[in-house]
Length: 97
Length: 485
Image (tube, rainbow over all chains, first blue to last red; front, side, top):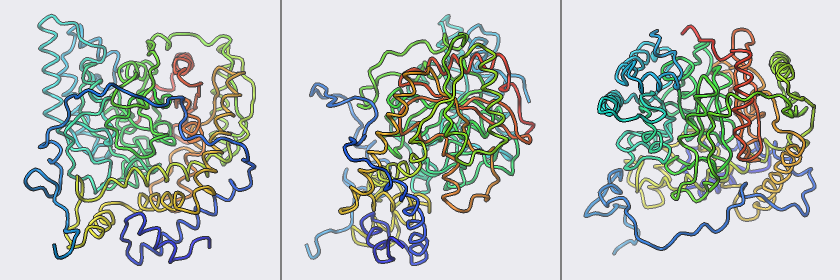
């Protein structure tokens, strides 16, 4: 096993996924199985090879800094699970405030 | 089945433009066909009855006012449900977006409306386009019209099945590792993944942004060309869309292939490709020789590394893209009381399906401190090697030809092991890594199930795909077969 159950639990926290214990078991299996298939990449000599993050040569796409129409506040909020006074509602972050 | 639903988009547009049939008649025929076969095919998540009839009526009114109608006038089209449609629910096949109604149109949607297409339905897909069968859809699994016990492929399985079953003549899908070409192969229709950057991704719900590309499904090369004519080109709203001129792709469909240099990469005939599929594809390649192409075997030596590199890069990008689902701005929010981190964790756990969670986890791990160089950076270096394979091959060849899938459509539930499922994309995902365009073209059957041949061209040379597919289908007519669903 490449990743222990506790390490997978830590990845789930980083990924902001609250997994049940059963889901965690399944993820430990999945992740370790997939990682073992990635071994093939370690066999390649990639020293001096530039990484490709983007396949076509486009860099620094700029536009003039001019205002243009965008969505209205109502449109932006229309899919919010909860909104009030033109704002998104989130749980209290600072306790006792 | 009414004759109207078997017509090509090109024929429909011509008949609507001349007034031989009305856009309303065509739309009603399509809606009737949908009603008749949907219980068996289950390709569609949302059918847009009223909107479709309203756009059809508007077109008919324009025609009677003497206006010349645009090239897709009155043609019903289905869109994979990861493309935002203003005012119509767009789910990405996920419970987390079950009630999401976009306040804007994706650029492809706007361009299709401008071209006169009648948007009639939103098609099923694997959740967030992650999968090869539609079994990962948060709603239901679609069926293959050639054998409803089998899957239509994925992730754009609904789009492919809808075109195959004549519910619509054309549809759009998106392709990150084969999600247009693989279901096109399974359903016996054409499916094209354009060059990365050829089509705007604005309003496409993102999976892996350096690989995603929108493209057309159709039953003829011409119908795919008409759609690409409408949707290709630079868009100021997508800075990765390329500012490269858009030719008339329709014109390429009628050209012959005398002297066309065709490479056949030998690696694509290993990799678990069944003997029956290989044999059908070899027969298709012989037909290209017969039509005057010069066919030579070649090699893309890094092909075997593409699958592993893809399953690092795509999940890494997915984990980043899907971080936006936090239960605050849109999408599902847990009913349980929880703090602000708990709200996000719980909402995501309830909203995402198993495959999506798995990819988010793999991607998060591959990008996390201490593992980035070993996984993500190395995968991107391997991507460079794969890209160079194609650059070198295209110095000698005009197009490359391979199978689309290792086997014909499999049965629902057959690929229980997620890795076995991923092998269904082994012939298609290297093409996304290289960013080049490719088309899946029907080329025969194995035990009554369609098989596709994949034609691959250099960056921005989609014309060669239409040229090759057009010439091949004029000589064989494998695209004129209809399933009996």
